Length: 322
Ligand code: SF4
Image (cartoon, rainbow, N blue to C red):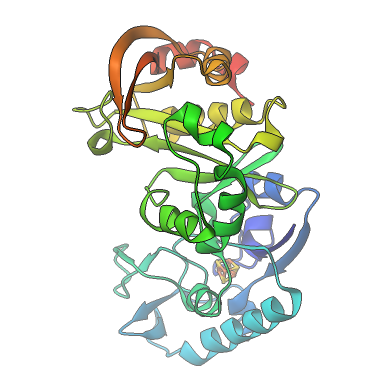
């Protein structure tokens, strides 16, 4: 996979204060992949160290009152030129930067206030069709990248989700067209903690995993520190320990990054693969629900409900980590 990345994430001292944002998770992702490091602020002609800047009313201003908009936009244009030439599969950028931030940036008052919105370079790359993600939105394991779903994943989703062996056992009907898969990406796989499971080598979606937070789940309802784990994997990738690896990372993310107290997980009677994944990842039996509705298939099944709590996770952390 070809990855364009904010240079400061790789350890390059290009940050405004002369330091860097070295990120071991991102370095783990870059291993074995083709890497294109860029620092748009340096590429726009700004020195390092430099006065920090923020975007105010659409214009980039340095903290000392200088207008640095033109330097920022020059750097962004140079990054776009490189991206067009190199065609990266993924662009991983430093969160919250006025150049590189994808989801959020500071509001221009230099008061530490965050607002929704992208930095100048991230915005330009996304407007031109490149898949840019904040570094903090990626999860990485030895073999896997867990990232947000994008519309361009529709064909890959259809390839695996159209197989009846994948969906029926998990309670949903096989997809019948790429358009249906696109619709699912837009309306179902768009949750805050829903990820495409990808191999690190090519970044293409082969399955899905997610934590349903309190409002959206039946068994974990009522508390903000409990959630429900769900997952499925394309058939060609079964029996390789891939989903176990992804689930272990989601468990870590749930307890360590999101502060969950309990993670629930369930499987339908007969779904032996899913049961094994849950057992290998430390979940244990809580209850059986007979005659449970399977709404998407208009039928009833027996559901086995498991859970893992934070204390149990802490106790077995070394064993459960990937
Ligand atoms: S412009 Fe981007 S790559 Fe350069 S230091 Fe800022 S966040 Fe890092």
